[in-house]
Image (tube, rainbow, N blue to C red):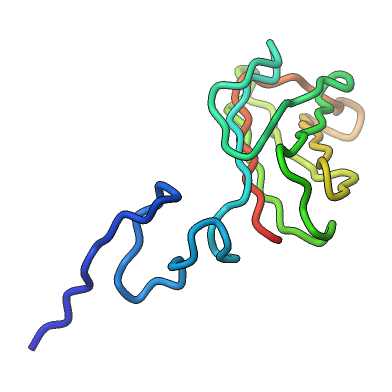
Length: 130
């Protein structure tokens, strides 16, 4: 007998299997509490869930503000940003965080004398926690 997990769509919009831990709607720790896709060049939000705004604090520096505060500031954050047209190494850094927002830095690196902050068009941030 071959085990075939039953797929189900839960109300958070995520697809899970019948053995998934994501049974609690909006309460499970393995379901994102907030996420956003935004344009760092224009500071426009493309799409989001649980995020009320993205504040442009400076070049390559953004505050992602949550619709509902987290219970603590020990939540997990993952970030990504789009490719660099100059073939620089680019990456995101997670700065200060509190229950209402997290600071994201987008950085480029060519060498030790050529590095700094950059506004990139494609940014994604996802947050897990209570």
